[in-house]
Image 1: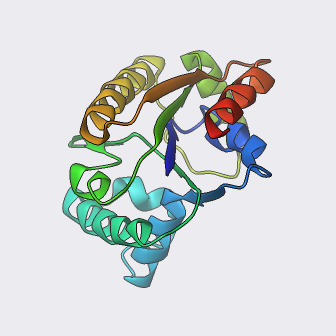
Image 2 (image 1 turned 45 degrees about the vertical axis):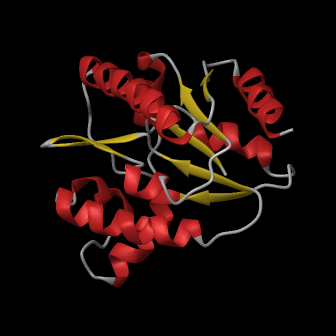
Image 3 (image 1 turned 135 degrees about the horizontal axis):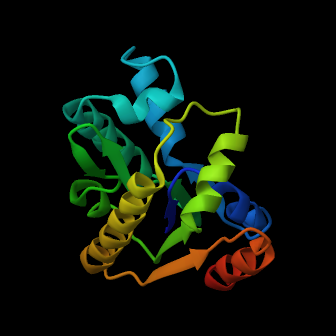
Length: 180
């Protein structure tokens, strides 16, 4: 499994679109969480996942981890490295989940903070909190720390791909080089 992470607005989905014909199946972690949480009737909208109580987050994450561990084949997991909550940052991939997966690579998609903010403002399909640049920079820094920890826990190499405006092709090529 290759795990691709990043802040909302960093361009994970856009960079991942290059993998469509790579032989890998892309699985969205948030979609799995939403499916489980909505069946349990604890949320009604995907963008409310990050506002779940940490105990609920952990319970749903455990169910997602079980589903992921049962998947076979070449999988790319599209997810968030960490989740910013009112009570602090939660790992998007807690050890209990990571320990059940065979991880080949950990990839963090990032971009300059101002570009991420601009992308978020343009995206009317999602419900996102309006974060100040300082808060977003802190979250990006936390993601880099979590990435290093995930690499230590799994033994998988960690790669950071910058997805700057005008640099999509280079970002996609770097991802494809990891997949080949």
